[in-house]
Image 1 (cartoon, rainbow, N blue to C red):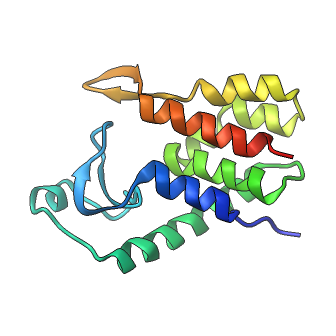
Image 2 (spheres, rainbow, N blue to C red):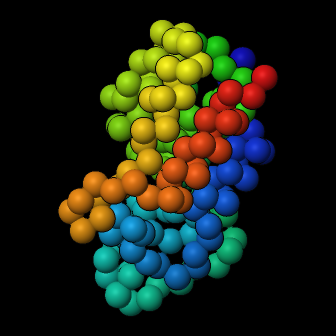
Length: 154
């Protein structure tokens, strides 16, 4: 059976990302729009103050989720609940599938490490480069805790 991103995980992604209908630079200075969509957004879009509709933001989210769901499904080799899968999709959605794929977190999950080890690996991903300096961000700390809490639910 194939996992799907649970409604709780989609809600977590939407809450964490927020929905900005005007293009902007996120704290890591990446051009972004909608629910954290970055793939098709440019610096010029931010300069031109490009806007989208709420329906377009939802469409972008669905398309982006499909990419991250596929990536997580390929990388994770152990059985997951839909909430666990969704928590990992949220993690990858925020950090990128490449970062997730090379992470200690993925290794711990695939080796069925104790939950406390998985939690330590998960919560360390609360930093972003701001003006060239890697800094913990309150929003990322909150998101990582919410993702792990969803992952750890039975």
